[in-house]
Image (cartoon, rainbow, N blue to C red; front, side, top):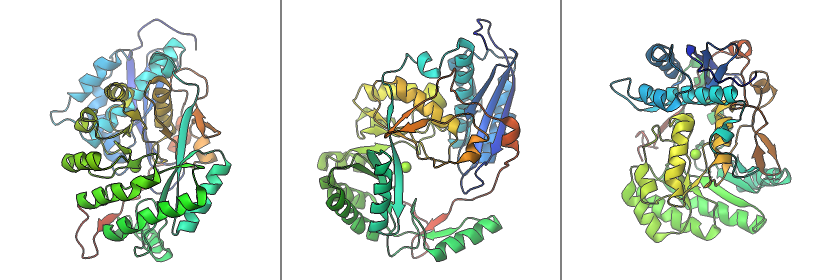
Length: 419
Ligand SMILES: [Mg+2]
């Protein structure tokens, strides 16, 4: 489409919930904004795992009516219009909805200008993006084998997770066969699986994993790990000190973000690099962590914190303090959010690393026209205006919502996990 200088007006806003992979936690909430200019349509990602249908309703019933007839070019104006529209604003559902709309508006602006979004953000600062993926196993040896597989494909940074032998499951690690059967049975009934978690065996075991991997791998690869906030504050402090000798790339989500007092203690007592951000649902959430420089990497999720408009402001706050970006990039947000991640990562000066941990196959390609390209440990985006990813609307509709509830997490005595 040739670039046009006329202001496009929004004529329709649609939310589509689709699950092309038909897998657990794989529902994407896609936003389509249609304009009065022939063929000028924008796509964005409003995926919020665990609240997908609520986000779709938020968009179509509670936000879209305020957008109809509005100029699609006024992204900042519309962002604030939508942010202040509900009396009870903020939170995961509202901000995920805004995120998807925001990405679609940037997509429209790029398509209208005939430029990729990274060019609208000031142009690229680098040619490609350092990236990482995750591996996991029930045993140290399984983790080592998986690391070596990724190394062979060029990865220089790898996230490692391992099961705790005493526990049947954990976050982002393989469950035992019995636990997996119980999970599948719960999924078939449409109820949440039940998992048991005890932090102390995990805190004792994890340094041994890194000692094992460093003995086997030397310094041939950089390693990182995600705690998922599954330890108490005092355990977090001990874990940071125990892991520091193994020179992690970063340690992620060591504490709940509100535990500022313990973050300060960790910073005083350990030099381990810290990362946090994927749980934030507002551009201003967790700002004390940034202003006090209590973390080293900002892991915000562009589908949850307000899209590209919010991300570039967060990046600027981080830039002033030497904090680097590491936007959240798991497989349960769609290729549209991954493309948004990549465009912002290409354009900000304080880029650190970009997670692209999707593991998708041709079923994604049947719905989405592009995903970030991987080669030799790095990502690039394919050329093209806007976000560079369009959606086959009819194909998306052929893969409707699948209910896959997240697990309930309880201590061994039945207490819901609270730290
Ligand atoms: Mg994480």
